[in-house]
Amino acid sequence: MVHDHLSHAGNYAFANHLIEKGLDFLRSPQAAAMAVGRIDLDGDLLFAMCQEYSTKPERDCFWEAHRKYIDIQFIAAGVEDIGYAPLTSMKIAQEYDPAKDFIKLSGQGATLRLTAGMFAIFFPHDAHKPCLALGGVPGPVRKIVVKVWA
Image 1 (tube, rainbow, N blue to C red):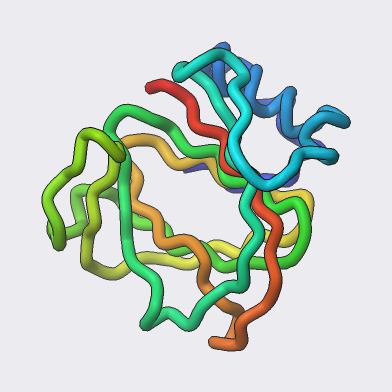
Image 2: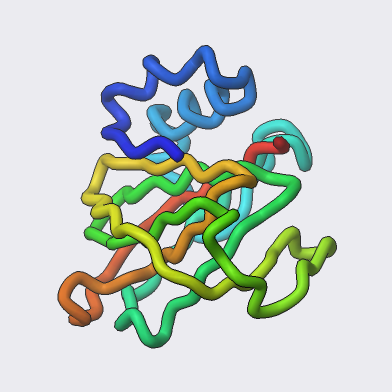
């Protein structure tokens, strides 16, 4: 898991060429102007999804993980807390769905705060719990999630 500000994205270019390409996209004018929805950056190997929503109280959020994709979750506007934990510390709450590359989990973890301009990278060995409202008070968020083939 990586948690940083987009201005430091160049520090992570060594990790994976698709991660580098995803971070480059997030720094581009195209990302800033992106409409809600999906755009392909390199077919199913690399794509971005723009979302706008209100954060939720913790009781309405859940732990998740992915096997095929790495998530780069970038907050374009607003602020959101995201839970993080090693996948090995979680219990399976719902079996893995390969069509959605999604597994629902239960357990405990730490919380990261992402403000506008910050990103977190979650690898297949990382569980995460997105959409958490600060202090349980919902707030608007504009987020771009870049999905990177692992």
